[in-house]
Image 1: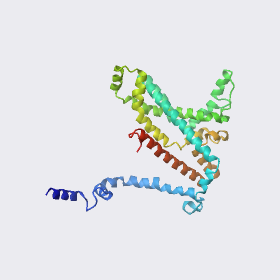
Image 2: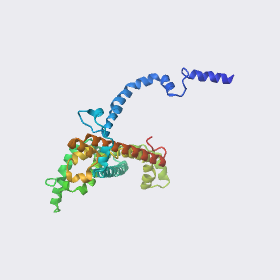
Image 3: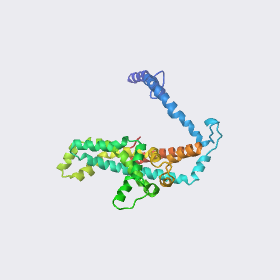
Image 4: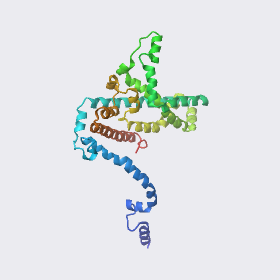
Length: 323
């Protein structure tokens, strides 16, 4: 008798004989909710997924007259051209090297400043520091490039004026490519660290104060509190921000690099990244197929790196992965 009742109940929970946990059952059960998401899904398909069909340009001898679909098929010709050129290793290395510098220096600096800022007792002074650090984040790269130029110009720049004033030799900074990876790292850190400081400071403030009080009772000093409580409590957020940053490690900061470096051929050897190479290939050579092939190579490598670093993060702690 009991078995019969259970069977009848299962039949009532199914819809017209559809499997209870199947996709069709779910769509029929919550069709109103899915209909509400339909405009967003259509928007996503049209503006996010349909443009992906343009990637076929990388495999065609694209010309404007024939268009994307009728241009002659070229196979992997443009991938071969890129990897057989000297630019492949140069722009790939520069992209990875510069981004690693930006990520490591930027996050270490932001974590350090957030911890120090948390120790400032005067609330007004703390707010002044926060605003002054956050302000560069809102400056456009065009304005920042003008600031950098007025600072590093070899004739009237503030740095050379200062060096001349104290009797030291001046330099043509824009003709010294060996310095520019460091200069770009300083500029990028200055522009963006205020944003990360705010995030890390919010994490520090949310840490339960009773943990610190218990540590002080056990004899912990300030350094113990920082290295055994604050930083471990910040680790999930640090890992999350690092994963997000690593996901874009193959994407150079095009706005910054093009605004500051531009077409300065002297500096390109050390500062040319995949994004600036692609832009230059399209703008000066009209090489759309080559540019698309390089862009596709950049996207695939970025995707693979996200999977690898996400796996490593989950191996360290199962709760730290993005997915």
